Image (cartoon, rainbow, N blue to C red; front, side, top):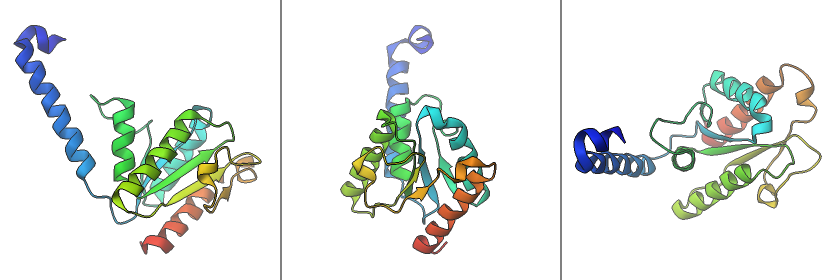
Length: 171
């Protein structure tokens, strides 16, 4: 609004073109060599998600999460889309509640891999008795129910994820 008032409508148009250009460049960036993870979780698991993101970072993995990776000037939807495009793997914390946001992240990840022909690398962490969506069926699942009962759970899960990614991407 300040740009509209101070510099007129042409300055606002320039800002919109700049933002569109940034988003287009971001989407065209190639994924890394296997160490970028998109972390999907429901808000009820945000504390555990932060612990897991920290543990994965300590293992040398780059983690995209909405609590650490949102850039100024982009909507959450745009940021998630960019984060998914740039990620090699999707780690899903599934608490069994059928979160719309988590389901949307999974569907967007699958769709993006179908479009560019890359492998689906999804690592579900199950925190309840069963997975909340059939989209996660067929992927090796980390059973997080027992691991969550003590303080070192996030680090042990990060170790399992790191080892799986090392095998797949030979990091």
